[in-house]
Each structure stands twice: as C-alpha cells, then as structure tokens.
Length: 109
Image (cartoon, rainbow, N blue to C red; front, side, top):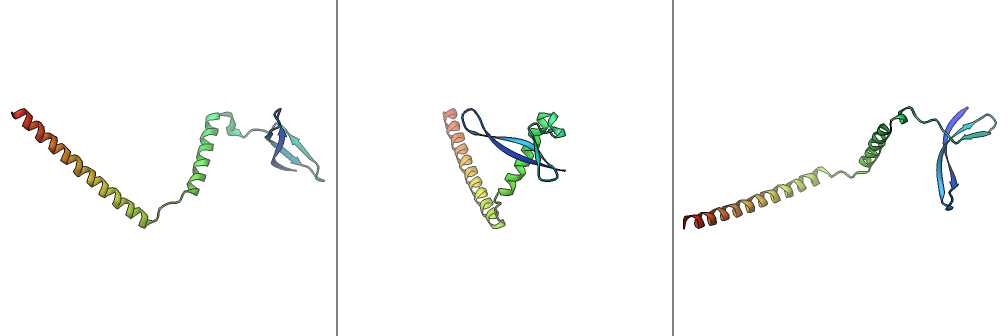
C-alpha cells in the first residue's frame, strides 16, 4: 500500500476553487481511497512550533534566491561607505567647531 499526498480542487459557494490537502491510499489494482481528514504531523500539536518551522524553511528558500555581491563589488561599496562616513565626520566636526566658536564669542562679550 502506498500513501501519497494529493491536492484536490473543489469549488466554494462563490464558485472559486478551494485546495484541500488529503491523503490518498493507493491499493493494489489501481483503486484508491481519499481520506478528507489526514493525520496531522506530530509537531502539529503546538502551533508556535509550526510557525517557527515554516519561517525557517521559507528563510532558507529566500537565502537560496539571494544574489550575493562579488569580492570586487564588496570592496568597492566598502570604499564608498568609508569615504562617505569620513566626509560626514569632517562636516559634523566643522559645524561643531563653528558653533563652539560662535557661542564663545557671544558669551565673552
């Protein structure tokens, strides 16, 4: 006896297709019986565990689709980041120095 999962399509009251997971038992001779209430997996008793397992599986699938940058691209973008960070640091230092000098002039009058 072979047990396989099949998806059967039915229509709801609006006429839209509804997917229902069922377990189909394939018997000798090609005849089958469809069980509309399949036995849930053992970990299905805790809904939180199902959500975590689903999240991890989907995260792994998304990571497989990711296009990772090459070493050359990483080095170039790191250089840009360092240059912009240095420029912003110099700008903030100049503004800080200017305000300090202006406040010193105002206080010493």
